[in-house]
Length: 96
Image (cartoon, rainbow, N blue to C red; front, top):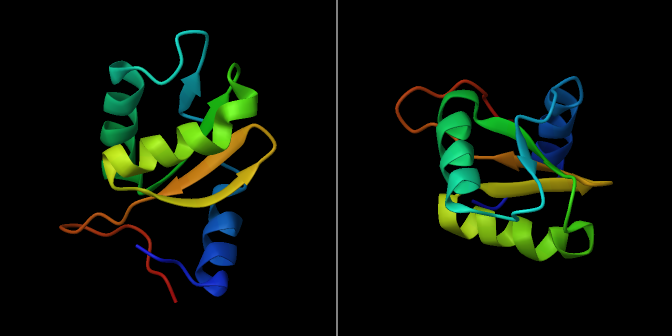
């Protein structure tokens, strides 16, 4: 899904108070991390992924997570990636 700049700003505003729900640690992006992203993004649509390790590769790892889960990168701020994937059956967030 391609987001417009207006939609990105809207999602960033919604994501601001959220805490990271998925942490990428020393093991990197494992099947467990992918599974956790799939579960949480299905119910929340908008999540934050924090990189405690692999900070230099966060862009590539985030793109890998997104291609595997079908999510979209909203923005990477510091060591936190904001991901979005609309729930087709029961959308929570309505984009302009």
